[in-house]
Every structure is written in C-alpha cells, then in structure tokens.
Image (cartoon, rainbow, N blue to C red; front, side, top):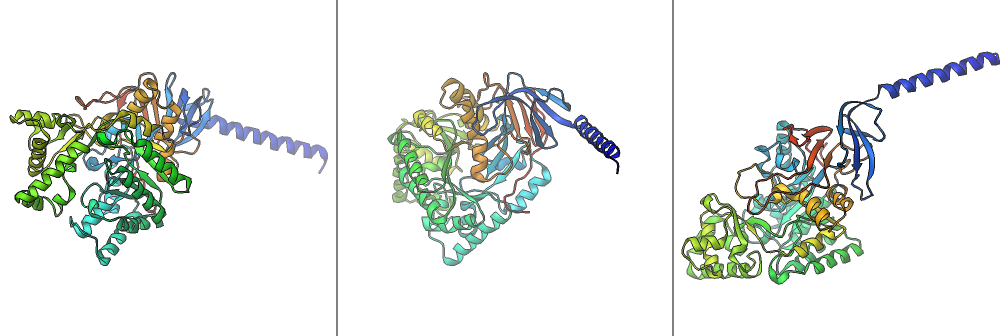
Length: 531
C-alpha cells in the first residue's frame, strides 16, 4: 500500500476515533449533578469543593461538572456534601409499620443496622424477604440476636444450656448468618442473655466468626461492673476470633463517672495485641431502656408470672427490693428518683415524661430510695414501662467520642411524632454531633465526625460500597448546612425533627428535597452472605 494511502487511512481512523469520543462525551447525561458543594468524602480527609455526578444509584464522577448535562441539578453552594450516615445501632422493631423510616432519614441516615442488644427478628431470612416486599426508606441490615436464639431454645430459664441446646443455638446462629445477618449481638444485661456464661457466648460467636461476622455487645454491666464487662468482651474477641463492638459504650452511675479513661485504655491495650475492638456511642448523658433494668435478673427468671409469684413471697420481695435500691443508688437510678424519667407507660400514659419522684409525690409518698424501689416493683407488676435514666456524665461522653475507633450510633427506635415520650436520640443523634459537639464544643472536627458516621462504620461492620463519596460507590449522600445543623428534640419535648439537613439521597433517589421529606422507599435490604 502506498504511503499516501496509509496516511489517508491513519487520518480516517483518527478522525473516527475523535468523533466517537466526542459523541460519548456529548451524550453522557447524569441523572443528578450536585454543584458547588463542600465535599467531605467520609475518609477523614480535608474537604474539597467539587461537583458530584450521579448516574442511576451510583456516584459516577467527582470534579468540575458545571458544563455537563443532567436531568436534575442540586445547588449545594454553602452546604456540606457528605456520605449518608450509617447508624450501627438502631432499634428497627416498628419498621413493618414505619417502613418509610422518616425519623432516621431526616437525621441524614441512609443505612441502619438492626437487631442490637441481643434481640432480632426470627427467622432472619423470612423477615428480610418481607422487608423487600414492602420496601424501606433507607438501607437496612441486621444482626442475629443471642437473646432471641436463647429464648427460642431455652425460654427464660436461668441455667447453662445442655449440649443439645447449645448445638441448636449454634445452628440458629449459623442459619441467621446464612440468611444475611452481618454478625451476632448480645444483650448480657437483659433476659435471658444475663443468665449465660461467657463460654456459651464464645461458642456462639465462633459460628458468626466462621461466616465473617462481627460481635456487638450491650455489656453485662455498664455501671460498677463495667471494667470486668469490657474485659469479658475482649476475651470473647480473642477466644472466638471475632471483631467486637462495645455498643452504646458508656459508664453508668455516679460512682463510675470518669472511668471511661480506664475502659478506653483496655480497648487500646487489646488493639495493641491485634484484637479488633471498636466502639459506638450516642451523644447524650442519659440512657433509655425498660424500667426492669433496675430489677435483679434472677427475680425475673421464667418470665412475668414467676416474677409476680416472687413478689408475693415476703422474703423474696425484700431481696428484690434491696436489689432495686442498690441499682437506684449506684447504677441507672443515679441516686435520685428525679433522674428516672418515664417514656412509655401503657397502663398510665399520664406518667409519660414524668419522673419516678413525680410519681411518688403524686401518691403522697416521700421520694425516698425505698419508696422508689416499691414503685419500680409496682410498675413491673403493671406490665413494665420504658424509661430515660439521667445517670451519665458528659465528660465521659466526650472522652469516649474522641476515641479514634468510636462510631456515632443512635440506639434510637423508629418513631412518629406523638408516639410516647421517647429519648431525643430517636430524632437528633447525628445532627446533635455535628451541631453541638462539632460546631459549638469543638470536641471533634467536622471531618472526624463524618468519618465516624460513614466510612468507619461501613468498614467495621463490613458494609460494602457505602460510606464514602467516591466513584463507583452507591449514591447515599447527605447535604447539610454546617453553620445551622442542630438537634431540636429535648428530654422535655422530644418529638421534634432536627434542622439544617436540606437533601438526603438514598441509592441516588432524593428522599429529602430542600428540607421536605418525600416519602419514597429507595432503600434496599442488605444481606452479608445470602445470594
């Protein structure tokens, strides 16, 4: 072939290539472009001012996209563009009724991990299939609960399992993992987990470890016994060869205020020898759980009927009462009946939001520890109640928050306005960190806080392709004003959504649009091992 012909062909090929590439560039259309935002990508790196292009449910490009075409533009000038927040401790129990998950999405949460504190749906696979059918407002994942499995096999019996019972529990843990669970959770403060020995927990955790799962633990004790309980969790990590999360980590009761320095030192020592220990935390100095947490576990073995029987035996009732008095003085009672605030009381809604001291006064009783113990028994005999316990010190909250391995997690339940008198964390956890602890108190930098809400939890739990603003990641994105974001829910008036979050994208769909909740169900059900 003549050289002139070769040159013509080469020119023709080059021209075609240029035309093809130009065509590709010109026809690339984004579904959404987020313009002019301060991008904090979730890695802990400093912010950058870039645009974010989204195609379908994925982030396609980060850069200068001002001349690019899109079906929808979001102007984020003056706003922070961050990964959607990942809540690794969420009580999703009402999700079949509240499947749009509004109270979480309005906090900027795009993914939540359910099944904490030893309690989970059962069977896991069937439940996840149901969620898939009804749709969910945010991405959800689950742990398999030790308390649930133990109750399935042994009820509320206060004893060690037989070999056959232990094998059945192992089988159920493995089944839960195969059906999509991300790990095992325990609630060793609660029934029936409180009746288990560490050997049982290790044996079951090994089954989760074999499937690549994590172990999250409501410690056996967060008050006077918190040091021993942290050591127990470390032992479980070592002997079961499993990553451990000290979930909603705290130190409870005035005698233990300041002891977070010791618990965090234990975490650091365990990490130094190669164990994978991390923590999560809600940013409040009050906890929330059933009033029964003040009652000694042995008194409730066998369930409510057995508890009622024991209270009718004078000597047993006296022992129960003394145990409650001890917990009021040294544990969640905070040594003051005014620190125990009722949240949900089905048998007397007028008590919701009121304290144990208020109840005593309303009955003409002196608000003494003794009378408080009697009222706790009365509450449990009526069917129980949930309560907020103001028994923590904010200095410990900040100390734990600053630890590099502490994730932010709500420990909140899905809720709608007017439903009981909840803990404000159900509405305000993530905005509270960004507004109060970052902007006002400067406990964390903004980049640190977002890392603790996004990439760190994704990596710790093993949630893939989320928690980071990066090409190829799912487009879970929260856009907020760092100068105004703040929680509004209080202990006195909890049913208030936070302010300062303008947009939330879940898998590329706009779930909060200029501050308005769109009531779409763009979330997906995440399964770790299931096909």
